Amino acid sequence: MPLALEIDPDGRVATITLPDDRTTRDRSITTRLSGPPEPAYYHRRAVMHVHDNGQREQFSGNLVATALACVWRGRDITYDATYFLPGRVIVTSPVGTSDLAEDLVGDARAVEAAVRLLLSQGPATWGDVLRAAHSARTSSGSRGLA
Image 1: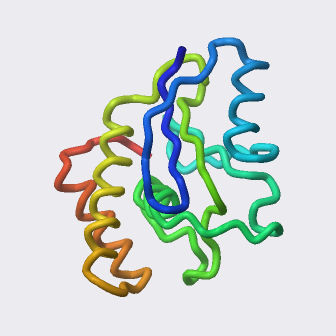
Image 2: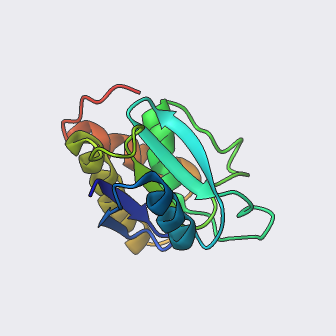
């Protein structure tokens, strides 16, 4: 059972396991997202599965997942803070039958901790969130390539 991550809109990052069988795995991802998944590619060694219709259904923006995607892509993907990955996000390896790489799990944990700490200190701008996420990934020692 491959190791993956589930990133909730509240900023919680949880390690999950998904079924080996592709059909069952796809069904599990659909259930976890509460709807059909759309793959998003921000790192060559990861797939971020987002709800296909999450933005139209006005799901909450997922700051941690969006910050992680920005860190992995090496640039801001939000179009001037107007677009955030919607709702829950499931992160898997590109193959789906293998575990998500440890360094990418480390990136997610570092970004989660940095964003939570920043927001616990009071209101923050999207620029503040991005700086904290980039700094956290750098200080975690990750060398993963986007």
